[in-house]
Length: 358
Image (cartoon, rainbow, N blue to C red):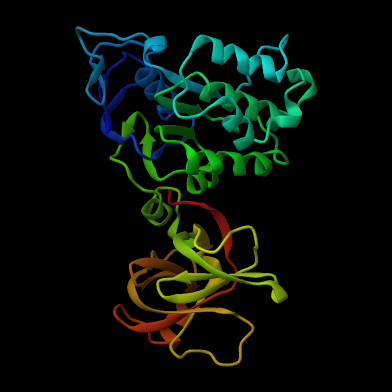
């Protein structure tokens, strides 16, 4: 399945948009870019909230928009979750959900109780929006969108109005959607941490221009905000066990063992782990007596040296995945490191991001 969109819009003295994209509909796809890059305009064209000449949109086998055809937004069966909370203030959370259910008699694989359980809404149902926190309101808004029987779920800066304290609390619920939904999700954000945590694929927009989508794992390393001197690698790992005495989770990373200071996942789970380049050091010999638990053997694949500052970034291939290490140019010289050389990457700390594979 796919969502194809071609748009070439020129506005005199204003914003222009030029994209030609195929969005996979079995993944969570992020539209990422700075404010004013064209994310919301592209989203409005996809969902039918805006009509422009020079635009073609096809969802699977159905043409949603062309020069001759325009399917209005309500007929595209799109579930919306916006930055600005849009619950009906005079209705309780339960009544907000009932409003969506009454408009659509058939639920797309998710019943009311399934959604309430997935988003942990049971205790919130009797409350009106004014008695809910911003994060709680957003969870109800997401549930209402799901119960509208969408074939496409669109989330436009859904955490933009959530404060810094509430944001980490709602992210796990979005992660749960990521693992549970059987419908495509388009997630719009200018926050890199949200994109890395939630998306499978990323489309970067800049000044109305969009590239083809790439996996979030590649985007973490090569994306425009990756900033290699400071960069981040994101890797997939499988949970193989627990070390309860030391409060550690044991992971398999490319047939090497990783220890993670978290215990919220079960054996067999596949998770993604984000590792900043600043937390990785390199050595030519495997360390023996060290406080660093995570040491991985790999091969230097690339060395990035832009001569701006004292550091370089080294890409180390471990099996099919890559780590980044930010080290000083002096260390690079002292260790005589070169592309193709076998090294050991020592990871000082890792940040768990999200369950990934469905």
